[in-house]
Structure formats: C-alpha cells, structure tokens
Length: 290
Image (cartoon, rainbow, N blue to C red; front, top):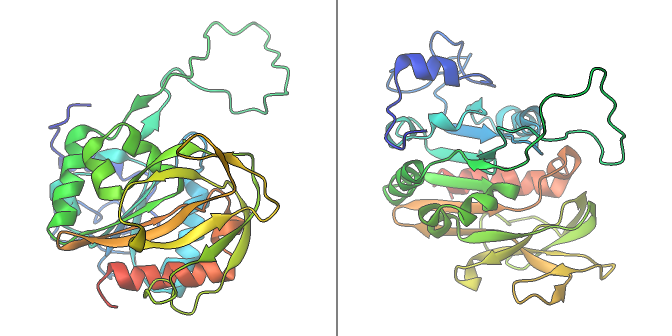
C-alpha cells in the first residue's frame, strides 16, 4: 500500500465492508461531515477489528453488546485498515484497534495442526505463512497526530504486535508483545481502584490468552495486572519465567487519551461482567466524560 494513498469515495465504498452499527452503505463515511448510524446518530468510534487469528465478527458481536447496546455508543465497524487516515479519523472521537496490523498473502493453515490434510487432486499452491504489515508508517503517524490533537486510541489484545513494526504507533500505544501461552484461566487484578476506568470494578478471572508484554510507559498508568494463580509461567521482558504482566493501562497523550486492554481473545472473556463494567467505564473516560 502506498503510505500516502488518499481515501476516495470509491475506496471508502470498497473498504466499508463490515459496517456494524454504522449507516447503510449509501450514507456511511462518504464525504459527509460525520458518519451516521442506522438510527441517524453520529458514530463516535471507528472499530477496526479482526485478523488471521481473530474473527472480526466475534469482536463486532462482543462490542456491539457491551458498547453499542448497553452503553449506547454508536460505532462504525470494519476490518479494512485503509480507513485509517488523519482525514477520516477527524470524523470520530475514538479509534478502536482490535487487529494486529498484518496479513498473510501467501495463506495460512486455519485447521488444527493435528489434522492430516488430504487434497485430491494435490494442492498446487504451497502455504507461505510470511506476513506483511498492512498498517503503514504514514497511517501510524496519522494516528499519532490525531491523538496528540485530542483523539482517543483504544488498543486491544494482539494489537501490541503492530508496535513491533511501527515506532510512532509504539510510542502512542506504550508496549510491544512478547507472546502468550496456551489459553488458560488467569486473574485480572486491579491495582489502581482510583482511576475512572476501574471505578467499582472488582478482580475477575477469565479463560483467555494471557499476553506478556514489554510495557514502556510510567508504571503509575497501569490499572490492572494479569496473574496466573496456578503459578503457570511464561517468559517476561528479562527472559525469566513470570506468572504476571501488565494487562490494562491508560494515560493522556498530548490532548488525547490512550487505553490498552490485553484480555480479549475469547468472547467469553470480553463478556465477563466485571470486564464489561471496565469497558463501559473506559468509553466514558476516552470520551472525556470522566
């Protein structure tokens, strides 16, 4: 993708793909001053979701329930990164990134690794799992500028992978991913109960991917840690085994705000009642309502 590609009416029509609570295709994101939902309300958030390991419909369904239906936040959903530009972000107050910023043009095996693949006639193409970055340097610069000027970035789960490839985004988001063990239960332990995002939220347990990260901002911004209480470990930033890592943080960035939520591979984790409470609190904070 050309880093300086300009969004046009035609490209937006192609990109709108999976609009969730957004307007019909004839009215959404097509040169208007603001996107409109099906009910006519202005969409305040753009959610770019899904990748090879994360079905976009899972996150659209999960966030529609907690943020759209329950919290009343109009959101435009898509899986097209091309919608990320400084000009388009001006239409929104929140950018939700639930996507790692890569694609596998050579394909990937989406079957269980234990499955013996039989093909008659034999496959002529060989799967090539090499990935390419699909959110460009320019798009990350656009995000940074937009947040500095007052926008709010809400990064989720494996989106920390994008920070491995894009320094501007890394500076805004605040961390890079190390990896994660297999799905297993772990506790999300609130360590700062005084922040608006964690107000009234209790510790909770989810069965999910426990992501281990290299957090690079001030520790005072960390709101919650992930803790495996069975003392099952994974490598930490210093290479040593650890059962805990930063899981939720939030801070001001220029005139804007940034929030990161690590748990979120499974819909069941996203719909944990305490986590839902945290999500609804986060929306208000990102909208500068608290």
